[in-house]
Amino acid sequence: MSIENERKLLADVGRRIRAIRAEQSLNLDQLARLTGISAPALSLIETGKRDARLTTLAKIAAALRVSLSVLMDDTSPGPDAKTKDAPQGYDLGDYL
Amino acid sequence: MSIENERKLLADVGRRIRAIRAEQSLNLDQLARLTGISAPALSLIETGKRDARLTTLAKIAAALRVSLSVLMDDTSPGPDAKTKDAPQGYDLGDYL
DNA sequence: AGAGTTCTTATCGTTATCGGTAAAACGACA
DNA sequence: TGTCGTTTTACCGATAACGATAAGAACTCT
Image (tube, rainbow over all chains, first blue to last red; front, side):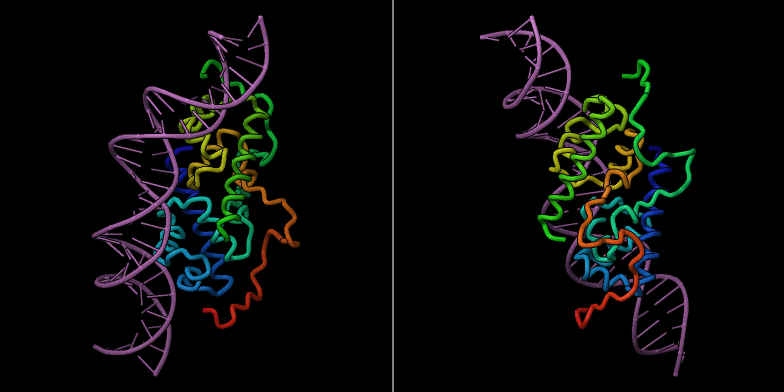
């Protein structure tokens, strides 16, 4: 996890939240009341400037009536990511 | 989002992390070195006692080589959750 | 230009995460 | 009963999230 990846992750999740909120024609104030999260905090999250906690994201997902994984949605076809079950191997060399 | 649901969410995510870590035969110390997160912090997260930030969960997911949504994995068939795209309707009444 | 709506940014105070370290608890196994 | 490996818990200090509030941008109307 590089620092650029972290920024990109936060930006992506924020963008996704904003898109879903727009689909439902909610403004920040309304989503704030639905979630109990202040509008400024939501703004920071949507613009990728804040590293929200898990329960915060869960509140947003619940208010938007989508699952948490929809917000994470890593359907970016990275270098052949299997997205699930890759427990074998993992040769750590003498790193550990 | 009730406070019980939040606790359950943290416990579930923690349990899932622990399960995946066990599959790969990693101990907390090894995962700590892979993620840069201290072993005590990982322990708190896995036992559902800490509300981790998004980038923290992302580091764990990366180290375990699974996608973030695998950690969230809300495949618990709740009351017919569609898990995606439910933007219509949403009658907020005069609540807003 | 002025008013209205929405979003952004800033500041303050409270609380929580997080890494580090160290100590305690829990195993298993001889 | 011991020790070893692992995990949990407890403290510390630094950083950051979060709510509240208020001020600033941006954008659209008339």
